[in-house]
Image (cartoon, rainbow, N blue to C red):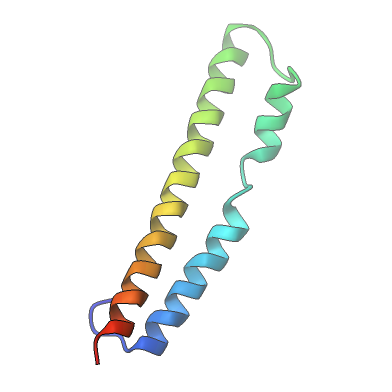
Length: 80
């Protein structure tokens, strides 16, 4: 986003926020199924741990992308 004007940066930040909102819950159905013991045993336990770790990683990445976009937008607004 190096050479974008404020309106372009605002549009990008809004798009990133929308994508984050759309994908925030992407792994919830799998996590809910695992919470209800949809898959048990050692393989189920591994999948449960993996899907929850993937959910945390996805949400961390989305959070970072939104934060970075908002920070860039704030910086662009401060400069003439």
